[in-house]
Length: 220
Image (cartoon, rainbow, N blue to C red):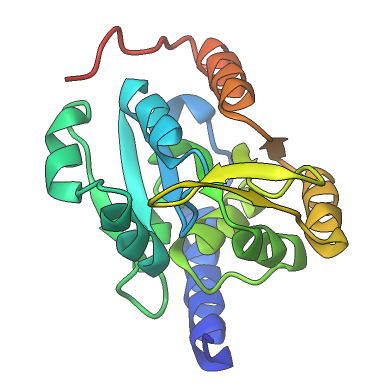
């Protein structure tokens, strides 16, 4: 479990960054922000499909939780192999600082959209109650405070969920608390919840249209 001290450190430093940044530029223009921030958690639910969509987006950076770094190779996805497939300028951010230093780029007007896909039920629960002790949950919280749109691909959204494990397909039956948390997440400001790769693609298409951008035609 993450210590309260870590969570407090992240919140304190992010707040200081917010105060300083706001005093410099009280009015923010979405046109100044140019990149997608895509966060990976420890979920393997439609992980390959999610990454396939990320590869098609222009100007995207990848934010990994510690759990994501563990899960990716279990599913046969190595960062070393993925990195050259992303668009030029791609950056990989890891959860290696107590205060989630990479989150500061939200205050530097780098990102216009934060995506968490796929999101574990643990990540969803933390987002719902305002806990930001991982890189993805911190990105979600601070983006919301800046009114930056977020898209969350939640995993446990139906009474029965069929998902791919590293070795086989398994059937899961989310508890009421997981299902309730997804509904609560829908009520959070600046957050759009999606429940399938098709819904995720549709949400991203709509966001690209809002930004006058388009999907990359291919990924290598």
